[in-house]
Length: 116
Image (cartoon, rainbow, N blue to C red; front, side, top):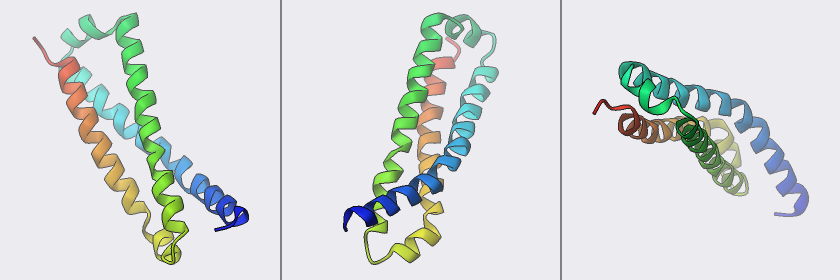
């Protein structure tokens, strides 16, 4: 793969994955808000603080860093002979990634907001 092909693969990956990041974040935020609401008011007392907010912000940033792993898989697959098949079915990686991140988010939310 030469530099021009790499640039095209990277541009295609950005074009495909960045709009989907919104869905990814909405799903994760919905999970956190659901568990916050289910354990309200205990969750309010323990997490509505500067440190609680900063911790949740840090987890959100880490979740978005993890989302970037899709770029590695995408560019690798685009560099192979299976590019046309990959481009057609890469949405499956999105679904698997959302399910995996959602599972991790659920466990964190349970631990953070569970009533004592």
